[in-house]
Image 1 (tube, rainbow, N blue to C red):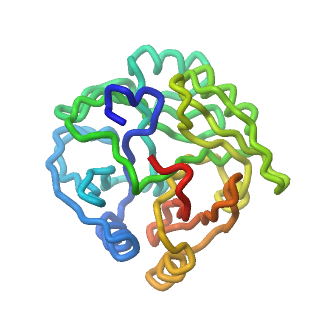
Image 2 (spheres, rainbow, N blue to C red; image 1 turned 60 degrees about the vertical axis):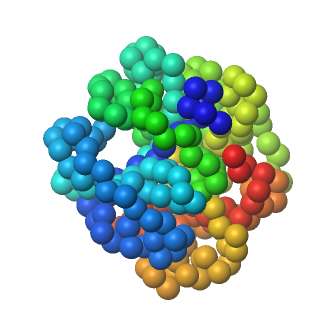
Image 3 (spheres, helix red, strand yellow; image 1 turned 90 degrees about the vertical axis):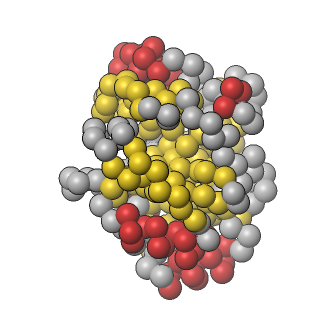
Length: 258
């Protein structure tokens, strides 16, 4: 998938934290990530210049780490590609979202804005101008975990043109996959494991070939397992907190690989 055909898809991730060194070491030890330091002239999250560690896995850039100076919650945030950041940001506000940061340009990266949906989950809108291909194979899947699946389905359908398809989980939880205009599955929205995350949040699921071994290693190096469950197709997943407190998932599966 090229960036030209990625509208409606998640194309980047950042980890926001005050503990970049701890986070870098944890994910390198857990998943073998490597890093390349870039110098950013203007972050999505704060103005000014700073170093930006890029995440490299399997020879591709997948995201980065953002060092926050203020005491904000640590969390992963996804960037969804849109056709027009400014227009979609205005639409988000009309649908009840809070605009955390109005549209702005980052040289060599793209145009972005940061929004918080009506339930409190944060996501970035983005039109990239960088040369990195849309990443694949490491960030396998994205889920919005929320206590109001119907409201979330409506908001993101109206905002991004995603089409919801309800899935029977046979587990007493609501689950919908959200499809892009090209028919590809973009994300999931669910109330499954909401008690493990406590508030609405977008989380990335990272690839593992052996979820049991990876969970054991995560525990050994400071991660905390919040929940384990199955995807609607039966593939195993887990939700964890890294040592900085950021929530992420692990997925042992092939269905949602890009």
